[in-house]
Length: 464
Image (cartoon, rainbow, N blue to C red; front, side, top):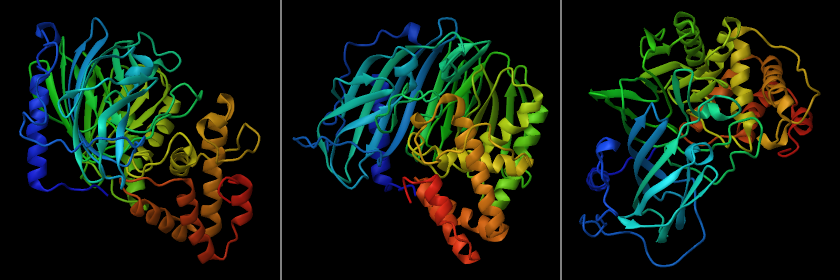
């Protein structure tokens, strides 16, 4: 679960973050002559750096980080100038000497690092594919905190073909996925043809201010907290990502969840907003009833510039051009990801079954659309690089969903959904995984007197 810092630590962190951001001169890019280097250091701000001499050749994803981000978006030039101040607490249980931050601006946006600081001191970072390696200039002991500032510029792709859809301004929509330098682990973006090559940790708070060269309507993770001219600020809590789409002419439709606790906002240029709202609303109610309460006060459903549908905490993409017959499946699937990937995370690179098969099961269970796979029966325990592009969906999604549904039928609805709730409750805002999910279902099978080892060992030899 999220660790809450004492008030005094939060206040000191906030003051230093504010100082870093101010020295980054957050004004519109065209009016900003940045100094050659920042002058703020931990000592000058009155804080003692926790970094000590030495090296341990170790990083970790088990860190608590808050993010304060300001970004200038140039719609005409398709560029972004992003400044991120991180306050990182080492909750990994051991010392670290570097951070491994994830950002698709490196893999897709020709990222150009303009400035990088650790406790106010300049550092040389390496951008390797989608990973930014940030040396701490020493060792950060367990339990200590460090302040990191990263400023980069990047260019959005001009089409949504291939994997460009993650980071593009095309067809009248800006689609920006995985852009904030975020605590992660080093993972290549291009190693697999399908799947989500990201594993990210939950942050207790993310504050983002977006300033554009024109009026834009934003759909984002989190909730809007204020607008001034062409600048708007959003805040999200307990999220493992912050993504957005934007357009000058988004239409908007607002509704509420069945229980009234969640505001649902749908943005689109061409897709039917009423249909998307209806399926988001009804599937959210079904998943809350079977699994647990949706954790955020707001849920945005948005048309993206193209590619495939994508999930974010509190925010999902449905690609432009999606036919009406396919909208229910995409909306329900991405809504289901709010529970599995969003609240209960997993290593999406090496264990796609834990989120994709589980979410596809929820989708097909809700819609009543289970079907046979169009690919040969295969193992379900490989990473995303272990499947051909032509069969990744048919094996992990379709066969995985059918595998889970067979367990549901064998153990009975009561025991099955109780096991899913136990797994979800035990791993909220942390990491679950394929083995933990299977073990939870195995408990239900044992209670029902159903033997599952043979089916587990044949489909998951990595674990059984």
